[in-house]
Length: 130
Ligand code: FES
Image 1 (cartoon, rainbow, N blue to C red):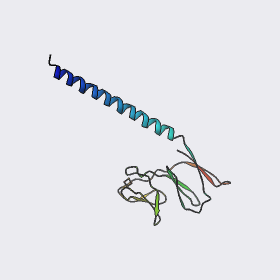
Image 2: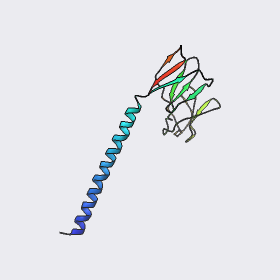
Image 3: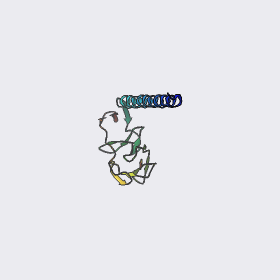
Image 4: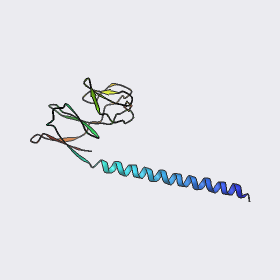
């Protein structure tokens, strides 16, 4: 038996198995993190004067009928945190969106996700379940 080939085969197999185990564990960690994040409740006061309120995962458009959008760009998922010239601007590749989340300029071609929320008119507070 050729010991060099046997050792090489063992190292290749062990490396592949360790790599697969690592990827499986990594995927589980990411999935668990996303699942736990979905249960988060965010409360945002509409008392401030701003029309557009940025929060980590969402953008609140503060108008007569508020709109809550995901802050993650539909192109490759960068977080949108800029409002310029009446448009939401993605910092990564320059996509722009109107205040309803519709794409105005690409590369993004789909609308920002609208998020469900409840509005407490008495306290002027929006609660978003993410
Ligand atoms: S991730 Fe927003 S334009 Fe590419």
